[in-house]
Length: 225
Image (cartoon, rainbow, N blue to C red):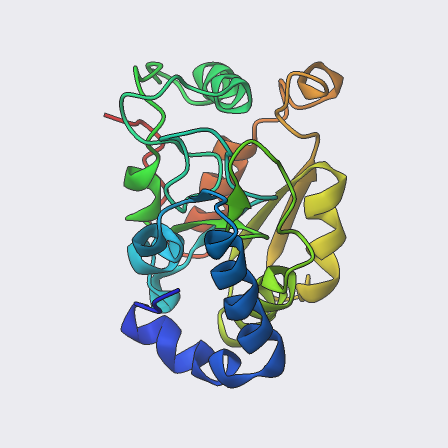
């Protein structure tokens, strides 16, 4: 695992890469590859969320659980897939909500959310790698310690960030967020299993922009081109 991390994140997180858990995590990933497992995303995309959204530019955090585990899908941004890949069901539901939440939103023909990331939306998965075809296999490998630290650092060192926490797993991370400094929008996960139980109609995207505007920050253009 090569660590090619954007400079502002490296400044904040550099101490993590020498810690025991990270040394064990690197060894675990090396062992997975030597055992013949295919790991997603590719090495150069593992830290894509950080490289697309510098620490000093984070305005919104959308927290996912772990990367998509199918070929060609994951590229290091939560809920996002590479162009040319079928749009996953959860992202289809996110687009459906955007159509009703953001006037004039047109459903894109792809699932690449890089345009959000470049505007300050940190698309963070709690676990940054996955074994092909096996969701959550890397969940206890050490990534959670790393991404909990990421959330804590954003909470401690930034102001007025909007944290979007969908589903019980994401909501469990609220304990790392200072709700006096930041806004937590928690709700139902957009998965087809739960979306009709309160995700649809929750208007997280317009709410986020209202909060950013109150904070004197540029709202997000949610339209994907």
